[in-house]
Image 1 (tube, rainbow, N blue to C red):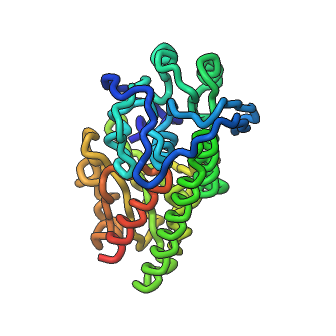
Image 2 (image 1 turned 30 degrees about the vertical axis):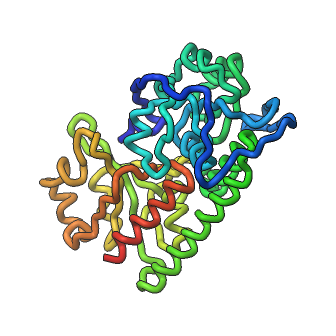
Length: 324
């Protein structure tokens, strides 16, 4: 699982180039056409000047790809297309973008060959890589995450990309739909007597035959959504300042008590640590929530670090799991 988060590791894949150099509008939005120059300030304080709304856009991170698709903009270049297709099905690709390499090391030559109007990157990329990208085209660099306000950061990033692509109306609509989903979910959970119910969301990976658990604390994007739904985050371990992710082992789960435990896997992974590697581990099988059957694998394809569409899919999946 670690390899799917840029701050930890990266994966690589390649797809052929098709429909490159076009921006197709989603059925729900049409990019606003204007000849006026656009000037933006990105997360680093750098000023970005565009001749008009960007149409040929390259995205170096999956949350950025989802944001573009949410706005009705099909990126011409995407990092690790195969990985995105597997991990983010809430906002599927509508074209066949060029695979620009891994999220950690995008191919500068491949990106340059696309002649993009704009490159949208995040601060997960090394400074040197962003510097190289700025020599190719204007770069809109975003803060990928902020444990102090993950939902606010997600919305701000979407709005900034919308300004660069002339799709402000689509961003407003997406944020409204997200807020409505949260409000409806909160109401449903309260009606089901689940308001304030403790939930622990995590993922896991195996290294040297040892299972490591990664808690999504209240500072994570998933944790922030759970809190907004009126649930209680059961994790007591600290999370990092960007993604709000913690670290523990199987024994560290003993302090959770009687909770609902949820996670998201992927069929393309070698195994599911919770159902395979821990199947005969007494520290896991004797946990109260395991014995009570309160471990929920949510559907694949919900990107835990995504945008409004992924999080709406998460809310739907979580409500189904908790109300069973």
